[in-house]
Amino acid sequence: MPTVIKKLDAGSYQLKDQVVSINRVTKVVKGGKNLSFAALVVVGDPSAAVVGYGSGKAKEVPQAIRKGIESAKKNLVRVNLTQTTIPHMVLGRFGSGKVLLKPAPEGTGVIAGGAVRAVMTSAGIQNVLTKSIGTTNPHNVIKATFDALKRLKNRSDVAAMRGKSAEEL
Image (cartoon, rainbow, N blue to C red):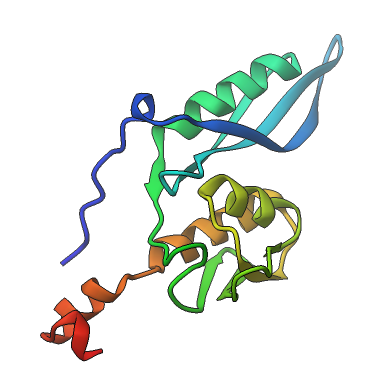
């Protein structure tokens, strides 16, 4: 049975946006070159453990970022956390990109590079170890990170699946 993900309302959170990458794209046409910009943006509310990503394209950078933010607000996900870290180790995949997330003890901080760091800080995860394996393409790395975050389960869900109480685990 596939899990139904209910849409989160962006208006009920204090969302902070973070630009992960801006790509200048050139289209060669008969009259010369048409410049355009593609922005990859992560938005999140660290206090509510909610995060989303989006991409926007436009002729100018600020418009591309604005479009990316609007797109990111449309696909927000809630992250299962235990205090300041993640509940268990998880591997997310997308394309040739793999992202390994490991829980870390208090005071470790976010050990992550570029695109993964943006997602972790936006989601409000304070202590985590990450390793990005395979591609360095920010789009694929972010999608792999979101895949990993969606795979996180909390204790009560696991207990319910096994037909036990949370105290038995």
